[in-house]
Length: 419
Image 1 (spheres, helix red, strand yellow):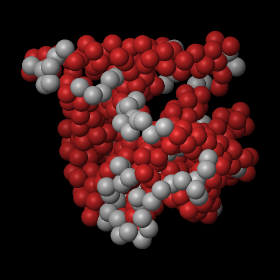
Image 2 (cartoon, helix red, strand yellow):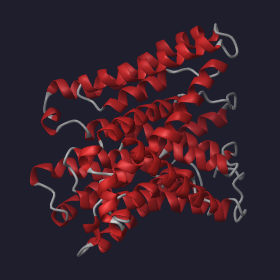
Image 3 (tube, one colour):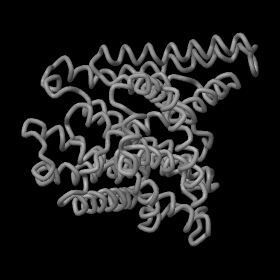
């Protein structure tokens, strides 16, 4: 049954991926759409018996294991992306201005949606039947889901439209990287059990683990880089095989330690990625090969499982109205929050609004958060379904904006972002 499940997932992902590319959307939008296509909303509505037979609940164990491993590899790649050194050094005062703009914009871009999303909790918790004991945690989950930006998805969008090396592209990537760091810190808090958050030991872990990771990056990264450099430009085939296995073992081992510390396993894989060096042919090959395996083969299984958790009852009653409200809050808080942060950081309103549209990309980062919230019982399947669609629509909106405005030169993406 596992073989059939993978075959169906791969075929559906290829179909939706081609369709997404044909209309100027990133592949991840097609992959997310494939999860919806295979779930109970579409496939289950058209052929419920066949959908249940292929994706029976008691046959998903193998698929779950593959998806979790793919997620760990993906988070490793995200960590390596965030730790890439800035190649454009030496700009003097300009670099200082960039730092101020990045820090202020990223902080406000997270804080505004987080506060607005959390404020809506007390109304939404009654509509969504959230248990009274989970209201605080639900508020944090909803606010974090509104605040995130999918750094890898944004990087792919900017690359596809030749914007990554433009001034606005570079500053957008720096802001997205800092937002991602904020997001994973919030993710660590969100996925910690409620009873553990009242424990002094658990709170100390949440504070000390990021500091320990930062120290590891500072100390371990240059030493690993020097060690990898001794393997030459490409390394022998046998050496590359062993190095690849060593990296995978480190990723899985860090995930195990992260779980043992009471944190989510993907945070351990993310930390290993942050420690992994770049700049050598060997490290780039390892990063490229593992990224290809994760994104092209394993992560579609994660999207499929995410789609299977959706419910057809989401739009019953006030469901559609609630979806429109959530979407409006998500877009408005993120776009205008980012624009306000950019203006405080010294950019123009026009540049701030452009950055806000780019930061509205939520993609897989929000999906991971939502799935873990559903697994923890913090959000209901109904809210999960609505927020899954919010993540898909906001990502597609950014993709469409890049395609129809940037690519068609309705404004100049190479213009300065300074006031």
